[in-house]
Image (cartoon, rainbow, N blue to C red; front, side, top):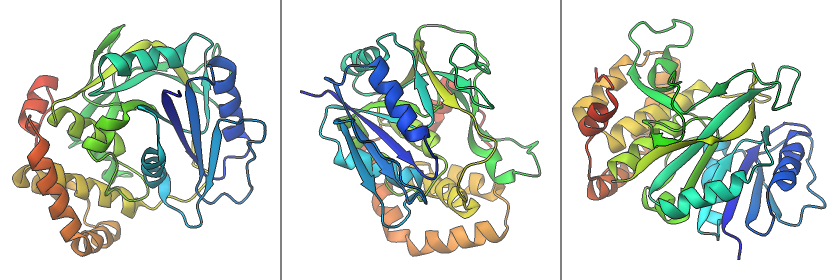
Amino acid sequence: MKKITIIMPFLNEGDEPRSTVESIYDTASSDVFNIIAIDDGSVERTSFDGFDDVTLIRNKSRMGVDGCRQLGADMCETPYIFIIDAHMRFNNDNWLDKIIDCLEREPRTAWCTTCVGLGYGSMDMSNNKGKYKAADMVMVNESANPNRPSREVLEPKWSNNNLYGEYEIPCILGANYGFSKEWFDYIRGLIGLKMWGTSEPFLSMKTWMAGGKCKITTDIEIGHKFRSNAPYATGIKYLVYNKIFLCKTILPKDIGDRLIEYLPKDRNFINAMNDIDRDINIIEENRKYYQGIFKNSIYDYCEKFKIELP
C-alpha cells in the first residue's frame, strides 16, 4: 500500500515539473508514493508519460497554488501528504522514507526540511546558493520596505539559527511540507485561502493552536529553485485577502483587527475587503470551528517563540 501522496501544483514552468518528478523517481521508491500533479492552466502542456504513479489534473480555470494544494489533499488516499513546488531536486539519501518516519512518529506535527537554494543557472545540489532552515514569524515589521508593505504583516522570514536535528519551529517554509492526511483535514488545511499567499503562517499557527507542533528535520535537504519572477501573474489582492482571512478566522478579534490596520489601505485592500464582506458567512463558520478545536492561544504561541505582537 502506498504511504504518501506528493502534491505538486504548477503553471507555465516548462520542463521543470517533469524534471522534478524524475528527481523523485531517481531518489525514492515508487512503492511508497503517489504523485498528484496539478496543472493550473499552463499554456504549454507538460507530459508525465512513463511515470505510472503520477496522476495529472488539468484545471479548467485557475485555482492558484493554495487551491491546487487543497485539491490535491482532498484527492489524497494515503495516510500522509507531502507538498512541494514543481522546481525542486532531491538527494539519493532515503529522504522520503525519513519523512514518512517523522510523520509516523508524530502525526500531529507539520514537518519541513532544510531548503537548499538552487537556480540562477544551476540546479546542481552541490553548487547551491545556501541552506535555509524553516522560518521565524514576524507579525508586523514596523520598518517595512515601502515597496512591498503588504509583505510585512504576518510574514515568515528565513531563520538565522545554526541548529541541527529535529526541533520545533514557529513556521514552516520552503515548499517541503509533510502532514498526516488526518491532521491536515482536522485543521482544515488551506480551505478559505484564495490563489496564493500566507499559507505557511496559516498552516503553522493552526497546527500549533490546535495542539500539534511544527518541526524541522535538518538532515533532509531538498533543493528549491529560487526565481526572481514567477512565470505567471499574481494578484496582490489575493495575498491581502488571505492575511485578512487569517486574522478574522483564527486570531482574537482585537489582535486580528490591529494586524489588519497595518495593511496599506490601497486598491488591493479595498478589493480584498469587498471579497471578505461577501464571504462573511464562510468566515464566521470557520471561526466557530477553530474556536472548537484550538487548545492554545496566539498569546501562548507568541510567548513560546518570542514573537512580538503589535
